[in-house]
Length: 129
View (cartoon, rainbow, N blue to C red):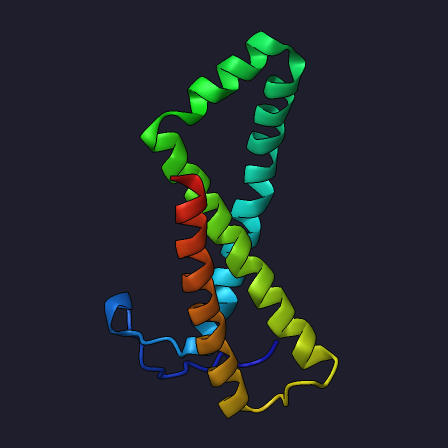
């Protein structure tokens, strides 16, 4: 059997001291927004089915949508969808060679995708409310 080697590595268990680069944050949020969008699809399909089931179903769905909490959730869903779409377009532009795959371009495109998402999120808020 082989010898066991003890490696003396620094261990940082204080997660509040770790600073992620903007590209990592963008990547993590892209995955999170994809999961949110996937889960939200079921909720939105249920709401659509309820609204199309009958005139009473439509009234029920409209009553559900009158709640501030539900509007806030819908705004969050639309924001997650916007970020996931913008991030997906960013990745496709890199994959097809329209954006260079350099660290500088990665940082810039991540910040641009955040900016576009903020604008789309504000527009979604105007649409919902």
